[in-house]
Length: 394
Image (cartoon, rainbow, N blue to C red):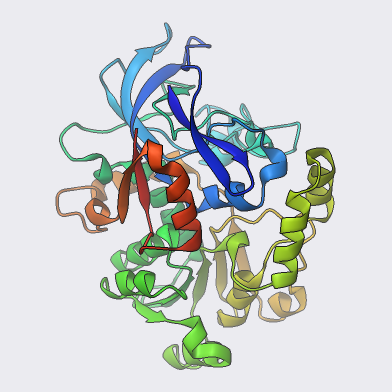
């Protein structure tokens, strides 16, 4: 089959790789019909290369049609249409029972001390072949795949794999009080969708902050009050406070993570480490790694006293300096973590109707054949051509 593979820093290619096969009696094989390109994939493209091997299959936002099932699978059958969550979870362990599917005890990657395995996401999370491919082996066939109805296009459901639950959890963790305010840093796929969800759930004021004009325009069209950090400059914090009775928003969602703009020294260090031998780079990153923390520090500065900072952007630094004096003094709450996809499906499915209140049908800015993945990664990373969300069609 054809699949998108990692080949080095800022280099992916579409290669022929072995077809997946049933390995466990609870496995299913899914023929992929759509697969998203995620902002988290850019961390692999740019920073996390020491934890990848050439040829690793990427992608963690797939959906498709069941082609084959293992002998112990009862819930789904060949021909069923399913979405595949990005975190691989058993659905029955103590963590899954609490709705913490991203911490599944059955698939935790003990070699690296990390949580549940993820599709297409480095040795840190199991080095499991991903879904930017023609076919995908999916374990836990009776609990992991999400059955969805026939009829509507893939765009209606594919975001259940990651974008929708990640954005929903970001807003849930933000705990905006009734009639309150929320600032969203970064209006890429997760930030854009988080802003839409917050407005749908009744947040009175949603402020979106992003340097890319096309992304601001998309959010503004849905009722978000958008700001350009470059235009506001040093006055950005005061501008947000002016919009929120001088206090700052009740909560801030950081939907940027380690890909934040700024911090040229740290960016240079990332580039240097990525060129070291993997064994050396892994040790440095796991013990002394730091992220570009521009967005996180801004979130701490923006949020009102007693407010909440909700992190959905991925961070990977082991030695990140945190402004604890400010966080303690402002009495902030900080919530974070990989989305627990299955935890939020029941909340989200009723919104995926023909009324389309979240605008999922038109959410993708680009739909491209899998063969164009190298160009798509570069376009998304450089934010060219209005790229906010890219879907691949194998």
